[in-house]
Each structure stands twice: as C-alpha cells, then as structure tokens.
Image: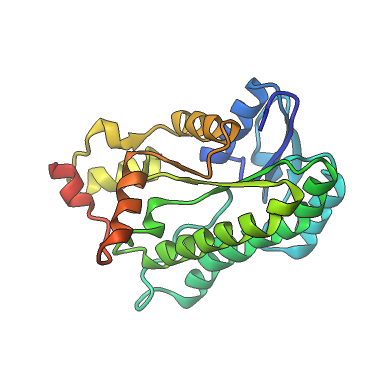
Length: 243
C-alpha cells in the first residue's frame, strides 16, 4: 500500500493516536479526512475535518457520502473506560463494545464499497495486546478488543476478493498521559522500552501497512500473541515493572 498520494480517513483525531495518524499521513503525502465526534477540537493543518460518531449510523453514512475518494481507512476511535465485566457499569460496558466492535464494523460496512470502487485500498484497525491477555480493572475493554480482533480476521477474508488489505495494529502500552498518571499513582516504574510514544507507534503502523503486514506488533504485542499457544493469561503491569 503506497501512502503517498493516497486518501485516508482516520477516526478519533482530536487527540492521541488518531491525531498522530493524521499528522503522519499528511507528512507522507496523503490526503487526510480527520474525523471526530467534536470536530471543533481537531487542530491538524492540511486535513479536511469531518464530524463523525462511529456509534451513530446516520453519522457514519454522512461521512461516507462526503469521503468518496478514500482508499485507506484507519479505525482508531474507541471508548476505553468500561471497567470490569462483573462489577462494572453495564451501560459503560455496552459503550465499550459499541464503539470498538459495532462502530468499527459500521465504518467497514460503509466504506468497503468505496474502497472497492477506488481499487481496493487498505483498512487498519487499532487493537490492543489486551485482546490476547486480559487486564483486571478493565476486562470489558479487553473483551471488546478480542471481539474486534475476530472482526478484523473476518472482514480480511470477506474483502480479499475486492483487493482490500486488512491489517491490525496490536500494541502493548502507549505512553498517554492517562497511562503515565495511572503508573505513577500505582507507585510503579516501567522500563522505557515497553512504553510506546504515540508518534513512534504510528510510524511503525504505517510502515507495516505499506509493507503489506497483516498484524503489526510491538514487543508486548508479540509477547501477548505468543501466550495464545498456552493457557489464558492476564496482563500483569506490576510484573512488567519489576522485570
């Protein structure tokens, strides 16, 4: 997948990974639709900003009516704070699944015909290593990412015939302010090499997409994938800090 002169749509670009995806794609010479539920918060010079709520079908359809020249779809937007499955708020758990699974699926269903008309193109879904190693405290998010992994594998098969490449970015820890504050408040110190700066992770993801990779993994993502050959394991932040 050649990103120079491509046309990409990125979800959730008002901050974090989505913002960095849009900026890096522009740097690589792509046209970018930068989308967010609150487009007024998007500050990305050179991008075309669109309002988009991936959990609202009418909003998804409206974006697809505008962005008819897209040949790269990056599904980044997701709600993360669902809590645990047994004790968490059920509405929050539904919101996590709605955004990570059904929202991603809605985007793919809306844009698959557009990608086909434009030569096939590519889809990149932003997952997480917790899809393979659940995490106590937010097991609902882990379950949603597991579901999104299954979705990714499914649509890869379904869209192969139209020439659409479907890839997944599966990272471990992303050095967001939220994670940094959590680690600090927990009294932990994590090795620098396991904390991905968002801009570095985005470059890894786009390099992998251009190279035609199916799953793009960092160190923790690769470790998590390897656990699937044995009994289920949970993600242990404290053990990582002591390593």
